Length: 115
Length: 114
Image (cartoon, rainbow over all chains, first blue to last red; front, side, top):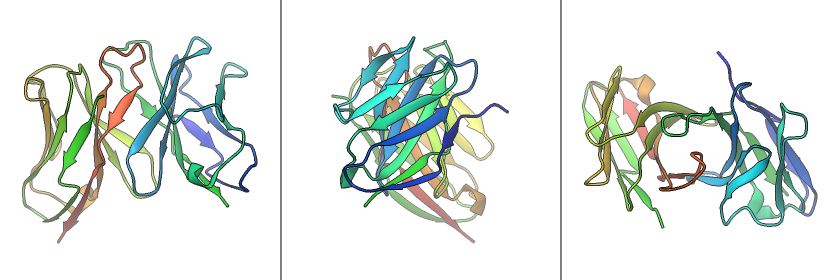
């Protein structure tokens, strides 16, 4: 069964450092998303991406964040200068072209710990 | 601003019992999802509800949607230990061009005890 895969599963970084979280969406999907979940809290939408550009982004997705689809298969989330409060589980998701009824399939997540 | 509220946030129930989790949302939306999350794991899609009166069932779980009341329920029948997990409802932001902008509830942590 096709699945969304994310690497690494756990990333520890020092405050102020840049991190790149990687995702390989399901191959025939065209919409891509990043969500985050701070430990014990609800899942929050960060950004959606379609046709090589951002479709929507939340207030959380400020100038420190960027997304890219560099090679047609990977979908990355970059945090330029990490802060302690960026520590969370980051989930990548993808969905296909049918917007009304399609569901987003989530990856296993990358746990980011900023120290 | 769309807000999604789930209750209860914690639910401890005995095996064999029935219970209902509620999901209220504040503005009209055309899509509501239920997800399951096991500790340290990702989100597993359970149900997609698209229209008023929609009812879907999978095993011991049944989800329904009342768009007029802006309410969805997830009913658990004869609970078993394997159902222990956190259950999230998520509502699509109305009018959004991207279907992925979902507002999640805080989740209901379900613990089923023998």
